[in-house]
Image (cartoon, rainbow, N blue to C red; front, side):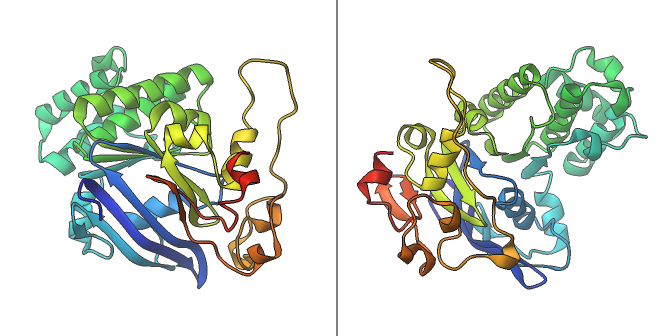
Length: 324
């Protein structure tokens, strides 16, 4: 575990009914840092953190290590995890409509989080809920405390979810696709809010997304996931300047250019493999234009490209990949 890491995942593996879906995740989250996790749906981004926080159903078998400030919390007693979840580590989800209780007032829901994690009750908890509403930029906070979720827009409800996550004064905020259901303008506002809150509170941030553009604006480091593994990891600047793994290159090629002539987007053929039908060797090989016979025989291990930059590809040193 790196000395400055707040959370370290070591060989984290998950299987559902004996079928592996997470196949050895090693990841460090530095104190106060911002790490993006990107990849198509089904790559294991959300499962990684649901497993780390003990939120998966009983049929999931989770192994490995999840170290919070040096203490392994994987498989910790429920009382310990209750203090960690929502307290030291908070998580917000992509659909606030399904996360907020539709029959309870928003202020009461946030005040409950304050009570659970900070032991504050009554008028004091309500006053703290109002302060959190102000902090996340909800207008007319005093009145909105008595509103129900259906009375607010999707963007405002997402702000409520962020306020609820902040109620426990977390050291790490895991934001799972927090802008997916929002229009572009509101999406930018939520990202700006997350950046501002991180600067003001000093908390670390993990941003889970399938959108590399969103991650580039928010994160200092990026982990690219595919089929339950991290296939490339680098600083955001290095990843966008020199993407090395063919999957990362494919994701970037699918982004529309902001200027210049119109051109057809390059799509990655095929889809993420079913965990029950995982191909032998490199899981990306069936979709990769650079595959060779060796790709189907050996699971690639991460290879250092530069300090802080690694990629799990047998052809990492091939000039046609490095210069692509």
